[in-house]
Image (tube, rainbow, N blue to C red; front, side):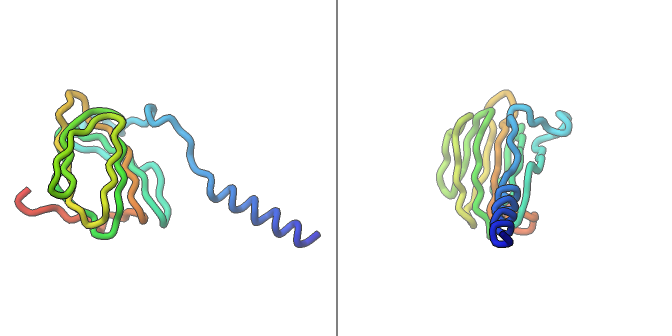
Length: 135
């Protein structure tokens, strides 16, 4: 009986711990619409990854993450995305996988801000973003 209780508790703990948030990303809004170029909203974080909603009006300067892989999914807007030495025309529905230590940035060309979901692995604590000089 004790074994059954321990197994049941363990299964309950794992399923409770692994469940996250289910939400309509369309309802996620910036704290204010009065931002100059970029605004960011942290949606979730743990030791494995951090998820952000990011709105970009003009551009994100070329930068890299020394220790992070970043996945960017564009939900609104369009632009020119630089990934390494290549430039890609991107739009709503596009997914960009950015390996760690890879230069990347975007120039928005839509009239509305670009809205993206950014997932960085492992957890992003803001210490490994390096901007390219002369950018």
